[in-house]
Length: 218
Image (cartoon, rainbow, N blue to C red):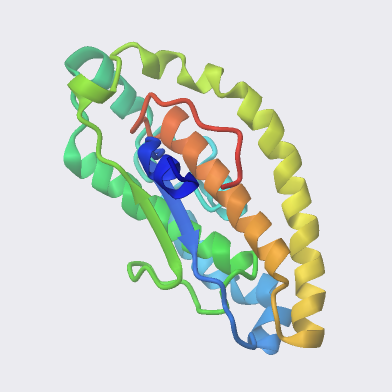
């Protein structure tokens, strides 16, 4: 069996993220003032995500917000629905997916992965997918009560990775100002950290899968 065949034979994690690499000269002016130009759309995201636990702040920092109340990712209500009714309402899933996509576009813009101003609905250069679960087949009804706890090792690793990501972004900021290009290794690393965060969110907070997230940037 070839490596490519083996890869396709492996089950893919039901949360994927790809960001198109900007193989062109980036806008140095908006890059220089990115911390300011992001403010209007960050305010919009904050109003949509709401002040729930982890909602607005996490959305700005990680590109995906986790809130327990309406106005953010629907976590507590979804957990209760899975536990007691074994249902995941499709419109709740669609809301969560749309919000995470929006917040990820804002995160990609803030981390200089794209100089295209974030859209509230157009995918742009950010391609994020979550697989809608068949609750009876894919989700154990009691798992939502413990997933957040089981994901603790990921929180620890991600705290270190996000610190490294900030450092990489600062280096990339200088590189773009002087060369107009985002160094590919730093770009791939930052996208990988966002991808890892998305998988943990899908498992522990968005509750779309019981597959434990891999410790991987790929």
